[in-house]
Amino acid sequence: MSEQAPIVIIGAGLSGIMAALTLKEKGCQNIILVEKSRSVGGRMATRRIEKGKVDHGAQFFTVRTKKFQAFVDEWLEKGSVKHWFGNDYQRYMSVDGMNAFAKKLAEDISVRLQTRITVIKKNATGYTLTTGEGETIDARAVIVTAPAPQAKTLLENNDLQVDAKVLQKLDAIVFQPCFVGLFHLQQPTNLPNNGHLDSELPDGVLRIVDHEKKGISEMPTISVYMTGDWSKAHDDRSDEAILEKIKQVTNAYLDVDSVISSQLKKWRYAEAVQFLREPFLNTNLEHPLLVAGDAFLHPQDIANRTRLESAFISGVTVGEELEILLK
Image (tube, rainbow, N blue to C red; front, side, top):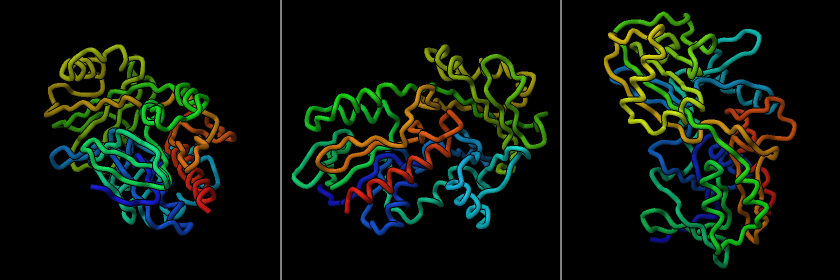
């Protein structure tokens, strides 16, 4: 099977979604967003547990730039997001879970889910992308928004001959993992009324979130985020052992006897602790092939950390650049 598509974006997290929306706004209509998972959104992830919900990736987003604020104001007006907590520095949340918001953003984009791109090769008019199932997609331009280690694997094949300096920049991006315990409880928690706690926690615990108090779950469902160091130190354990350890270290906040069910989510590329001060990378090949994502920070970014806003800015900026290159 061969499918013709002028522009292919690999990865349907916020960077990929915003790159596609930016290109569409500028008149590019034939765009395919390719995602290996079952849903768009990347770390804008929500899971159902019986009648409850848990956000188990990004819990909220903040705003530091005028460009992002303009979009957030529009989302607020439409009722897609709302202020969650923080009066001096506002945190915003999706009203129905972070993944529902990602799906809303991507609803007018052509998306192929559960499709993993394994090889990118040159052809006469651009690139041929091969999926894990052996299908091919031809594109005259490609944007890769997968995490840097995965992007590097795609770009370092001999057929593309990407400059070593580009690969070195990707290699310089270093991610920390994050293990998240998801718990369904019989009884309400003693967490703050807004459902969020990220201070004075036991060693190894990054944050705890009660989604019933957050307002997206009909029953007590809890996400417990472990630090990168803790997650790396426990990587060789089984999921069951990791969940038991999480319950032990958070027993002051979670009634273990109240736990009905538990699940573990392992984010291998949760946060870039070493990132680039460039909003995207251009491979400078004959046909456009660019790399973007939340680990590609704008030089004027004052936050010095990866987050949803950095993913947004990178996606918009790489979309703007590709539209120029295609003229």
